[in-house]
Image (cartoon, rainbow, N blue to C red; front, top):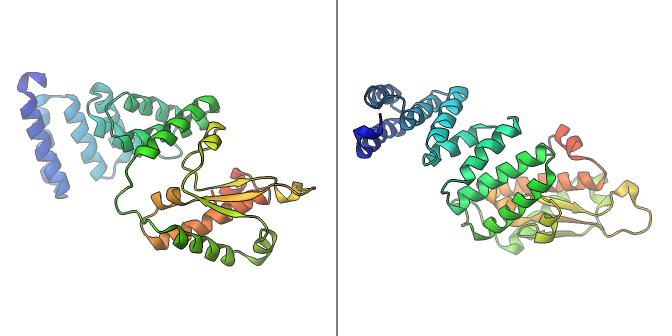
Amino acid sequence: MARTNGRDDIDAAMERVLRRLDAHDLDGARREVDRMADRFGGCPEVLYVRGLLRLEEEDEERALDLLSQAFRADPTLVDAGLTALDLLDDDADPRLVVELGERLRAAELTVEERADTTHRVATAHEALGEHERARELFLEVWELDRRRRRRRGVPHVSLSRFGKLVRDAIAQLPDPIRLRIEHVPVIVQDRPDREAVEQGFDPRSLGMFDGVPYAEQGAPALTRILVFQRNLEDVVENEAELEDEVYVTLLHETGHFFGLSEEDLDQRGLA
């Protein structure tokens, strides 16, 4: 039904809805959506704009349903799929993340979109215990992240400045922790190396403890903490947030040094 009315007409109707939404004119957007539905029926584009409207109305559950339907019906509506994937939070069924994410990976995406989508799918496979598939996808993310552009607005500090942030964070650690790690090297890298990712390590991790936990050390052991500068810069908006995130990351990795698991750290708000 929609196609008989012309692609240009549908695009123009969508543009009118989007302009209303951009102006936060929800009443006007509802009227435009109703006109679009009257003219084009239940085509994927109508599902898409209805989903965006529900999102503006803060009805995320219904928005997710409509946007997912739109993308499944028309895989060229990539924005619908990407928005739906964003609406699937960390507590969502990982099988839903895999299903939607794989559909997106088959679509035409930018390098940034493909990297983010693939990372989301990889972590979902990991949650499902499908570690080999997660490892394959993590390697793909590692390669894509080498090609992607820096996100606009993220802070990018010099290596010397970042090193000072790390030293300041170490100095702020509670004395019992700081004294026990004073002989543990803290090394700054841009990102994890390929060898670590080949072992299943998340290429977007913020830090890594590499070695034997303190309580298990008998003979001297090769132990170090790695902090990944570019990954940290990519998840913050300014240098103040970067400083905070460096501190939290060091707390997280020293937690591993003392033998805490990811679940233990999550319970302490350090995951």
